[in-house]
Image 1: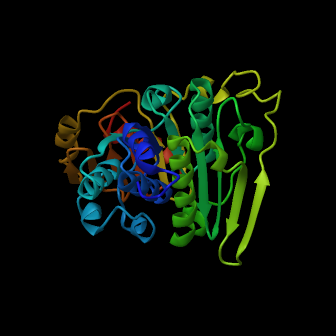
Image 2: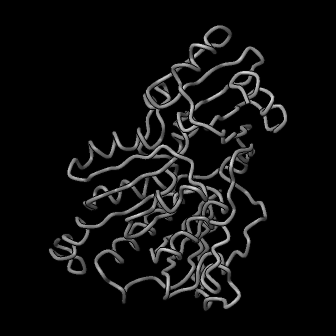
Amino acid sequence: MLFPPIGFSGQQKIEAATVAVVGMGALGTVIANHMARAGVGHLRIIDRDYVERSNLQRQMLYDEDDVQQVRPKAVAAKRKLGLINADVAVEAIVSHVTAENAEELLAGADLVLDGTDNFQTRLLLNDVCFKRGIPFIYGGAVSSHGMTAVFIPGQTSCLRCLLGAGDSGGDTCDTVGVISPIVDIIASLQAVEALKFIVGATSAQRQGLLSLEIWQHQMMDLKLPPARTDCPTCGSRQFPSLQARAGGGAVTLCGRETVQISGSRPLDLEQVAAKLARSCELQRNPYLLKASLPEGERLVLFPDGRVLVQGTEDLDRAQSLYDRYIGS
């Protein structure tokens, strides 16, 4: 409140805001930390994954106890954020964001901050935000390079204007690594733009796509192009990512030797545990069930029906193990 651009009235706006952070990995944990310490009234955090030891190098809200307890990231982050600022209402959602549930998950948010690690999910968030008129603050970091931009429906172009379909692959933290300072810098820049938007500091809002490379100390601030008339999101308002109904099926998680199978039904973890206990070593908590298979792979099962098959990137092999242990 002593900072003049925010002041008492700005702090009141922060306390009244609902902010959604999608992805509670490296970027998301830094963003959520800043939002909680700033006093955002309602903080919704969404993530599909659980804490692993390799995350601790850059994901600041987690510790070794979270790894040992196999806590979902959203749950572990909520615990830590509650210790930081108990006045913030933290809503933790353990879910994979899809075309089927994205609009529901983001309903009521005043703005959405990107903590994800792939462009297909970012384009999905972009489509929801531009359909619903919600500002979307993009951020990405890999290796020693990061980028961030603010996309505001009706005022700026959208992420799809820059990326097109976003089908091409690219480096990820799991394939080429990342140093944590670039994560902190990009996520902090996202957080400050969120605060500017919440308090109504429109004249201070950054207008371009900021690109940083901190190992060689390079920086570019590129002006966002005008919205494309042929853009299916902010031009014709077709929102293609929301039309791509995924359903079930399997997808490889890049660089993680893991296949995610969406599943066609919720899972009763109690019932599945009783079945798997005959042949597998199990570890479980209220949020997930982890099974080490005799074949060497591991299954991580979630109540919403998702199953991670760890130890393979072969889709047929993963589907076979899923059918064998979970059933079609």
